[in-house]
Image 1 (cartoon, rainbow, N blue to C red):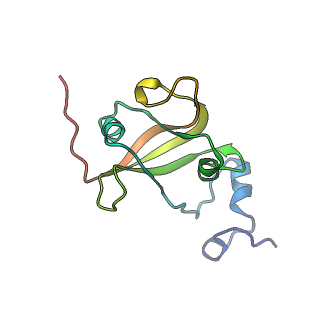
Image 2: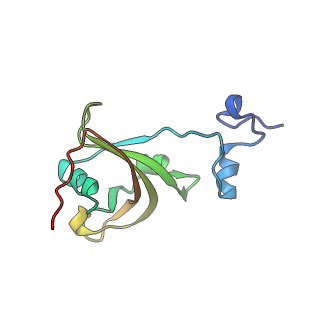
Image 3: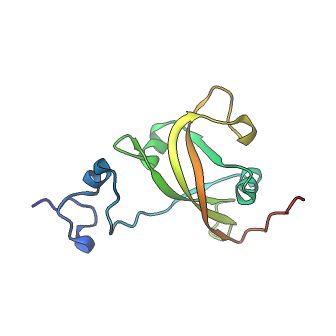
Length: 135
């Protein structure tokens, strides 16, 4: 019996989270930590208003270890925070992470390869100014 599931004590599963991921499903008891990413005000406001649908991070080992599991892109919940303080405005989003080039109007440099975080849904907003509605 394998007990290498990182949360075995709470779920009692016989195989590890990695095997769930390989099977294409999330462990029903696994509650991942939300990744917090600081972001500049311009991009933060565009995400809150719904104008910006992707955020970018450098395509490197640091972010690779946070965004993928065994090299496989995945869906995550990410908190974008406008600043570094716990009291800074923040928005939690469900995102799909994949590699690619980005859109220059949304902050990507031309022909640069990034981890692209496609924003699928805004889950919560904290301490955010309501976006102006343009008619």
